[in-house]
Length: 210
Image (cartoon, rainbow, N blue to C red; front, side, top):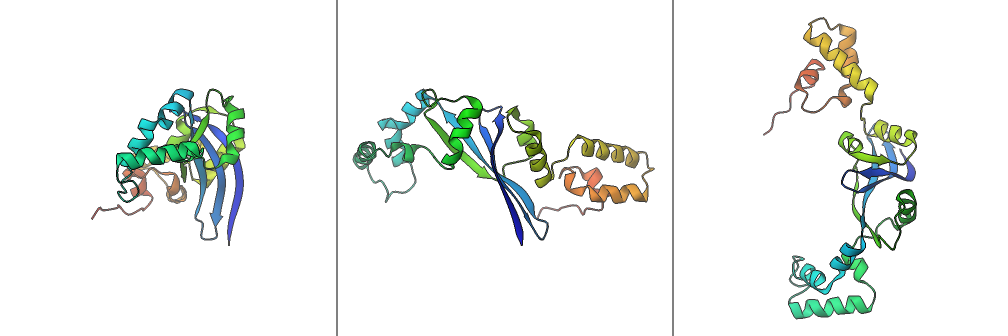
């Protein structure tokens, strides 16, 4: 049996101007768990016009990699005109996924449709990591949301990182106790994959590339 808790909450904006949303957190009986989110990029008027232009759409159609889909420039121009007439250009040029989050995002960052006509969904899935949180330039969610993400993805907090560094010091001084080794083993999920020193002390076998 697995548990899934929906959040649908805006987390913040990173240094690249992309907006991060927490969709849900899951946990399976076997211990597998994680936080699932989505990434949005506000598209301003200038980029909106450029990406919807005939030149950009025709080029995109011709370079889509599927020759059966669009075989010639003449066909691409006709497809562009058909999409424009039917009001489908936005659907072709942008990813409107998770439209239910558009209004909360606009409210959180004061993004008017006049200045930013589109919120383009540029990615999603298990997007949360230590780097993701470190790259946040503006956080708009309650602290407990960040805590939930860190727990779901086993991202160490400051206390855990400090404890790991203490154990490293004891290891280097060659006075680490059996109890502290057991503690280190319990913190393995928080140790960086390239931290050979702590991983070896915790009894994690070295991964050899084939």
